[in-house]
Image (cartoon, rainbow, N blue to C red; front, side):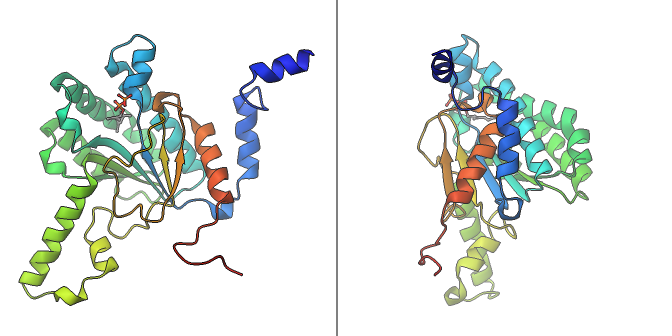
Length: 265
Ligand code: FPP
């Protein structure tokens, strides 16, 4: 009887998340990890609201989640992590919230850069960066410079990023190549477009994670996600920890990726 009551109270088989993390670490096949993981860090506002706190607290708590996820990616030697930190549409938010997000970015980069470098992380901001406020730009250039020789995890920080804007920027660059005679219109193919995106040279994400229960792509990596596996959870980003990423990876490894083809016989 007591066990049945305990089973009901426990959210899953393991009462201790530490124990589940260990089990999942043993379960995942280290040879078949996703090379590139993308995350829409959503739910900060709702998390804060649930605790009766201003939205800024949710964003601050979201930084803790990011820290834990980066650490796990480094431990597992994941090649690329792309996180959606500020979209081209986020400028519609109240000025105070935009300021909080920009200040958090500067604080994060200044406080974490040493630890990131110690773990071999290379900071790679993507988006229309020129439109960011000066202090954010300065902190980003310093972080890029300090981490440029690192050869561990590439951390794509999507800032003032929009998938459509990225495609427009690529089209403009390709059109210039055509205008100046460097390229013929008929030669444009998948590789041409990919080579003009902010993620040029990187493999497309294998796994996209969206926390907080929404089922939207929200203008994120529109070209690159063509054959990415999605993993959605109702957990809000500030509650998202390595255990969730490990669950996502185990699930990812059970999937059959056909890229529009047929199952290998
Ligand atoms: C979406 O949640 C989240 C954002 C717009 C910002 C994400 C930023 C962080 C996690 C801060 C840390 C990032 C860096 C790089 C320091 P939301 O505010 O839309 O949440 P809601 O949908 O619940 O309102």
